[in-house]
Length: 494
Ligand code: NAD
Image (cartoon, rainbow, N blue to C red; front, top):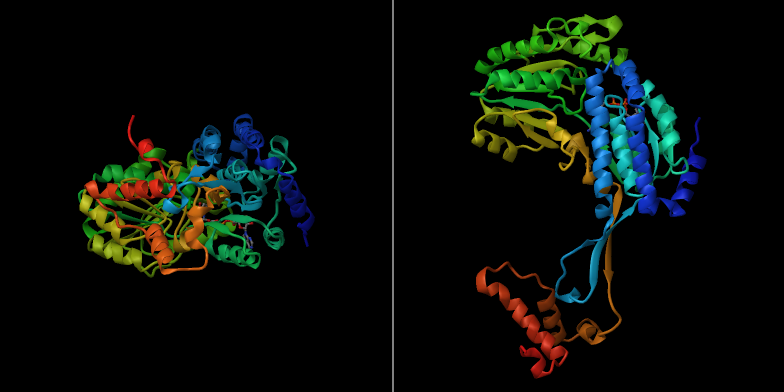
């Protein structure tokens, strides 16, 4: 049985030396990650081809470019993000220095998933290092070629005292989780998330859980279905549907179903000019276990098109299933494969009821040209992210936090949000020892007069508009003049 006590305590000792706190050290690590992404691009493409038959373009866009942009964005903004953040002050703290200092948490554990095995490990890693932490990285054993590549490259480019890669499966992860960390960042399914959270609770370790679930798509009447068909089919064929924010199932009025299927089929023909199995631009299911799992979901509803299987290649063709019932197997768990079930509903109200009767999804998609419908859906539902008239693209904008809610996860990352996830916001208030007479009102003996003064100073006032908003400043000026006995002449303008 693996034992990681020595490894973790070694890294913890390095963190306590303080070396990770400097801007220079953080920049050097980011530069190392950038070098991996530029100098080893071909190796990355090759590893992902072996793991998932991932098309070169998908690897370059969704893994390499996404991570590269995150590193560059972090490099560009790091100095700014590290600066103390000034906060608004009240009357009591007028003379104090008050700010939030973002500090590293310590030694963090990052557990990656297999579907985007490079970016799902490098994005949290770069944020953790930018925030000044040490990190132990456990890539998913399911995407073994990428895991081995990361194990080889990371020590070549990053500080080996502060960043360690552990490869292995359940026994290794179980052993790692016995150690004490200052944060655990987990990406994967909600069953394992419970194991992670239980282990973290033993040490009161905070967690970020990036999970999945069934992300619904509502398609309203009146949309240009050619565009809907292309965007939706794209979301389903990318990585053969093995994306956490992939559109999982469609809800649409009965009369939209058939025309939509026609457009989904045209989109597929446009994309692959024939058989997706013959195309380099279509991936495969990660392994036999997941192939069998997705295959078994084909029994629901009626296959409108697709449903072709090549077990020896782990190939499942993009498949649309119509007239699906809410209790069909394909509607029970996240599909995480290239099947798209359609459930017909009367209108958006029924769609909202269905969405709200299930766990909160990681993403919710609406295709509509009617602002009232969009507003109603966003107001009356909850999901990690919300995207209108497209799918998945909200995950590419680093200013938006990426994460779930309820069973689709807790916490978020991307861009500045990653830096914040791996930072402790330390509240700092710095006072001067002078002018203690101002503080007399809070010291015993307590009197009614002190109480009324302190209540008046502390109490939040309701927002006023117009001329009334200047009253507190006038009062403050008067108090200031009395307390410091400002000579009459000084208050006068020259
Ligand atoms: P996985 O099998 O690669 O597991 C993820 C991690 O958990 C791995 O590092 C693995 O070693 C570890 N693990 C697995 N079983 C364990 C156990 N019993 N004890 C301790 N650790 C264990 O990935 P997966 O769970 O199949 O990933 C797919 C899921 O992840 C889907 O639900 C998907 O939606 C979700 N996902 C979410 C995001 C996101 O950003 N929100 C991204 C990708 C995937």
